[in-house]
Length: 165
Image (cartoon, rainbow, N blue to C red):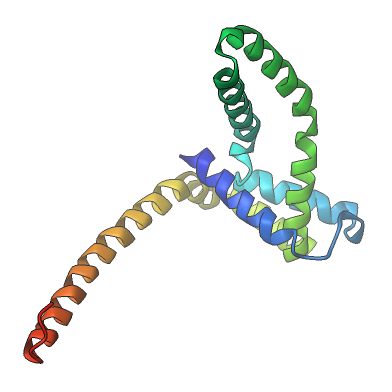
């Protein structure tokens, strides 16, 4: 779950970050290093290695549907392509670092890394996925409850006005 959450958060950060017209040359090496340290300490990018694995699985499934008799060859070809494409992973890391650098000063990034390297920061990082999941469940339960109450109130008000709902 943590990897999935980290992937989604990083993907959202990347999408919003690309809307900023700043590029790496706008940041000092120290600023980018601070971004890298903050990202590593917060574990936001921990699940990003799973992206290539998912792409490989999707590619295999697509190609096997096209030619099931070649599933062994497809498996080998996709695995070879995935290994070759793994070298492109630093491109994603750089983009994410740019996203963070665009939003935080070097000093802020250093403080973020410092926080996430502290015991409470490590606990937050560890607990975030579960808290987000439980918060989502709580929101769904609340939504269902309020939806039922709203429907009952509207039906009651409609009945008082002689409207059958």
